[in-house]
Length: 190
Image 1 (cartoon, rainbow, N blue to C red):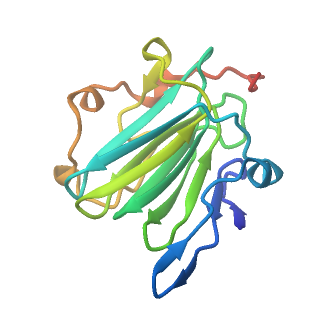
Image 2 (image 1 turned 60 degrees about the vertical axis):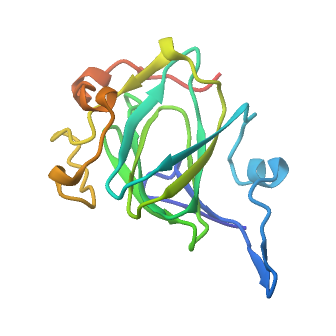
């Protein structure tokens, strides 16, 4: 398993080995002990799977705040996405900055996004399936989000704005300025 820290070192790009032959392939996509050694800690309590029918679907930018902060281990099993994590931990030297990675069924990479980050992705191919593990169950009261195209974040999404396919909820998310205080200075995972 290859683990690479990105420009924000708390966000990790993971490439599990994949062993193939004429029958297909085998891959161990999660092993609690190995992932913990790499700094990816759970416990993971819920798995989620989404299908995006079109290219240009944007899901995010989302997070959950205390008491239901979520870390996410994300991957693509069909298609491809451009995946983004935005640091919203006040006092962090990378506060307000983002990192991104292209995840696909072909490159078999995963992204670890710890608590204290917004997360979102844009599909690069139709019929993309995205699977992820989370460290806390979904909690509607703790759910927060920021509009995907906030100019303060200046995220260079890989599509033209007019191509973006969004849910009604994601179209109405607030600007990044409203995220101040969601993860106050000195915040850390319990």
